[in-house]
Amino acid sequence: MNTIFENSQVQNSSESVKTFFRSVYTYMFAALAISGLIAFRVGNDPELFISYFISATGGFNPLFYVVMFAPIGLTFVIQWGYNKLSMLSLTMLFVLYSGLMGLMLSSIFLVYDIQSIANTFFVTAGAFGGMAILGYTTNTDLSKFGSLLYMVFIGMFIASIVNIFIGSDSMGFIIACLGVFVFTGLTAYHMQELKKLAQNAQLNDEQKNKMALIGGLTLYILFINLFLSLLRIMGGRD
Image 1 (cartoon, one colour):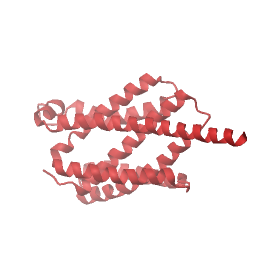
Image 2 (tube, rainbow, N blue to C red):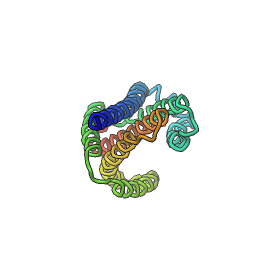
Image 3 (spheres, rainbow, N blue to C red):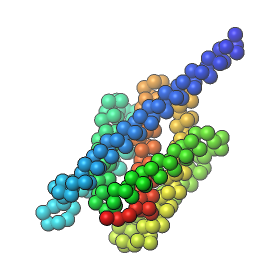
Image 4 (cartoon, helix red, strand yellow):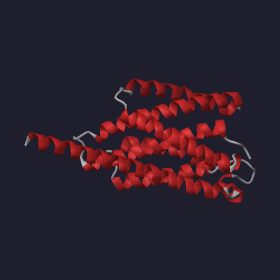
């Protein structure tokens, strides 16, 4: 009888983990679909892009800067306020974030040829998938590794801001190479953290649903940043 009960617990736990990750990847792929469709539509219509983001004087208009920086603020709102926000509110913010990212990503279609974008996307999917499997299956604790990667990421972020004013191609290439290392490593780290959440029996269904959304958002952000890093290295410009 005890053996039957233990086997039942293991089965229920396994189903719970599968359900959690199914939700995580549903959110991730939904975000990629929303962003991809918007980016493709706007990026392949230069006149539409100009009408959205370019002012009469030829510079960027305020909407461009809103699209550039609003996703950062939305990320903090979602991650810090998920306990207070309803699932509906989180979902709406999630969709808004995905849409804004799509508008931001539309610019890559004006810089890189479509073949390079497609090739880089598939390379990104392969690298991301491999590291996700590694993070899920490894028994090694990646907590310290994740902390180190976030320190490198902060340095990359500061260097990227500096490079906006310097405009150094060499620095941009180095940052992109570091980005590939950082974002693949963080993919493995977050997959391990998500696995721990999925196995946490103390979380109720609402909490797990919210954490699945945040997990999907996190993986989406990592995928996009890995894609952009690889595109800077591999991409052929128009």
